[in-house]
Picture 1 (cartoon, one colour):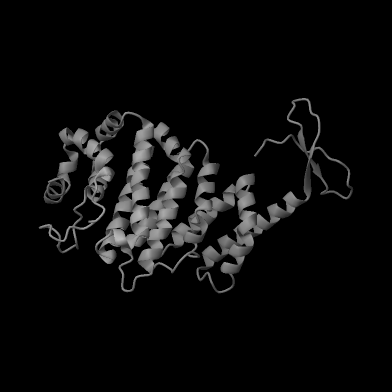
Picture 2: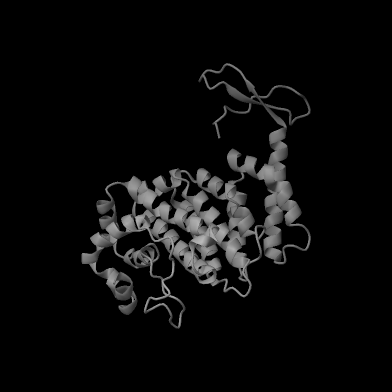
Length: 325
């Protein structure tokens, strides 16, 4: 009924506030329904349409309706009230992402691999939009998502779907493209709004965000992601001043350099940006290797200073107290 009402009303059903409470309850319960044997109901009267198969399972249709409801601030308030606490909201939203991961990794869980992967990709995009919108509405939930490794989980699932869809011949890559776009939009949003952005970018790097953005993981996607590549390189270039980001980049720069060798990057602007990033990584790594951290007593009891040998002599030069960066 929910699916039929949503499709027949062109989404107007999602703006009916009287349904907000039961819809949130259904969102909280949908993943507990035992229907793993069916992702697409072939007998459903709306199974075929000009735009392809319609989803029939609640775990698919509910996120779709949710993305429409997110336009209304009252719905966001209702979601938090019905859920009870921010932990429940965050865990439920991420549970949908984990569910998609399990379905995408196990083809035995779906009845039609080709059409089901398309629906999973569409569901994944909806779930990322939901997480983004909730994060905009509530700072507390946004930070809870980060603590629960939302960025890492989203990019891991993004990569799985991208690989699965790209490996299928004559498969429409539109859904795969959307998974990439929304994953990077979520990352960009957090890097603007998060209280501490360093763990956010570190989560993304640990889940292969650089390789995904630069097309180093899996078959290439038939789409123009030049803007995403440029923006990610710009982001990484700016964050190399932070020790954790620099440490990760130093460990991977040789592999990145080999993968992005001569002739690999066709776009000149992207090639110049990568060159600048690589140069900065190697420069900072060189400077870091010329410093030796030693333990000494200090007035503020931090005790950590830097011994620098950058000059002509090996004289011990106290540069600054360590900020534990």
